[in-house]
Image (cartoon, rainbow, N blue to C red; front, side, top):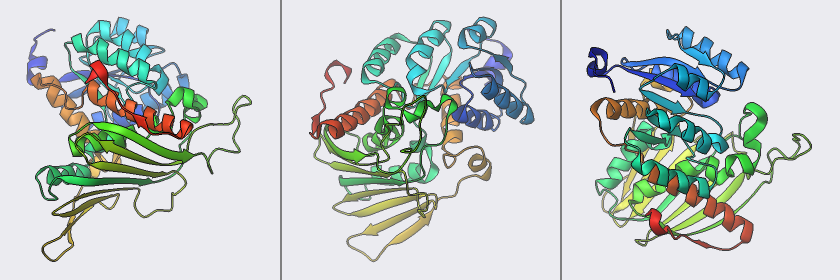
Amino acid sequence: MWWNAEYMSGRRSYAIIGTGMMGREHIQNLALLDDAELVALADTHPESLTTAALLAQKLGAAPNCYANTQKMLTAQRPDAVIISTPNHTHFDVMQQVMPHGPAILLEKPMCSTVEDARALHAMVQDYEPLLWVGMEYRYMPPITAFVKRVHAGETGPVNMLSIREHRFPFLPKVGDWNRFNRNSGGTLVEKCCHFFDLMRLILQDEPARIFASGAQDVNHLDESYHGETPDILDNAYVLADFAGGARAMLDLCMFAEGSKEQEEIYALGATGKMEVKIPSGDIIWSPRDKPGPVHTHIDVPADAMRAGDHHGATYFQLRDFHTALVQDLPPIVTSRDGLRAVEMGAAAQQSIETGQPIALDFGETV
């Protein structure tokens, strides 16, 4: 590490590996951080790389562009690397990046399989630089405020937690990789790792058992890629029993783009019910012992909203990541958090395949 004036001032250089949809969102949000300089982009897909470079230039950055990770890391020495490549590449890309020693923000899901996620979790225990797994949903300002109020005890200990996402189908991705379970880990890993992360965060507990029912009923059935039909789920119910006695449920539908709210979370305890809704940004408190409900609206800065598709969350996560990098703080979202989200999603996928509840035994990874 070189301790020059720029380093001491808080200015840090960033590189992004993977310049698809999420990579471009990171480019837009890095532009909102005064002390973050985007110096490099890497992608094996030339069209994505060109599009991302033009976006960066439009936002005032001048990153060098590379056709793959190794070429970039041979030529550049960034303080931090953001990995936003397809899910099934995360394990290999991490092994290429870690020997160079930058701080790393690894996009969700941590890996596409439990085996790779556990292996990576074990590998990074001795990694001294900052290692952070990207779980944007906990950084949506209305959800952040909701979680703080639940943790402050307004509902009392949470007995029941419900998360509903009714949304649009999976968007097209480069090479159509997200149409197949073997690449994505399955819908309940690829998409719903966010919600399993939120369950653990809100309840501050670990799951003990998962039971799920789901199917591919509507989306992508008429699509074909090299003779294969997509096999990703488009709807599911997932019930998780937690070690402390709380129960959590996920209600997912990906053919509900006409919904007023895309995400809704409900926490219920002996004192009352707390709910939050996205995109309206409303928190509703319904106490049991006094008149209600009480509505609170949480605003999100316009710049953060415009810089991505995650209700401002990408900006706030990058801000905290940058602060941890500058101040040498531990990560808020750890490899353990990333691993648990993959394990829960994979267990839900397994439960659907077998029709049986899946007991979760974390063994030495606890």
